[in-house]
Image (tube, rainbow, N blue to C red):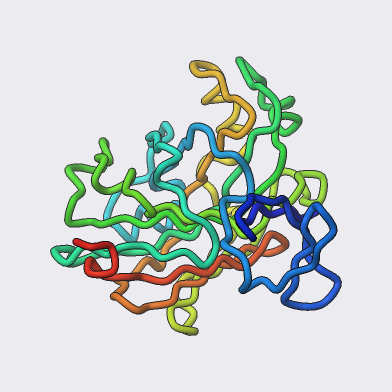
Length: 253
């Protein structure tokens, strides 16, 4: 099942795909066009746990050796926007790039969970586009706040797809298009640390709660984006996430 959260007519609604293409059915029964609503993250976002360099080809692309232990950092829910949102590119940025990622949403509290039991704690999956500004990166071992916790820099959606609808562990194609041109592709089978491992690893020292989300990393193919670019991230079976790059002026900067 696919579910979304949208703002419409002064309220927040849960929604599912409508019977007609380009429509949504709200929880109260109304059917509306997709472009009539403001798309939100498809679930109430808790702690965001993000993985860096979790595809060997991406690590190689950035001239970084494969890691023996996950490179993990945290992000606040204020960094999140939804489908069709606009992400600011600062005027002083010289290299800002997209990152198409499988986002794993926790559905049951996970504390000291074994790999074998890990997938029972997954509620579902969504698409993430987790932007980075390389100019601001201090070093690969400590992705800093200006790179990875920016307001509007983490796009999630459009749908939360139930874990039961996706084979476990997921092996899904990822693709990113910039202005309609294929710019990035990969498959989650190539994760250095897969989803069961990550849940076991993280829950060994921190409690994962419902609504927490694990961003599993991006494959090779990242490229600079400019103001006005439309960036579309697709993950097989999960959805198509659209985002537009905007300049400082739109945000009063």
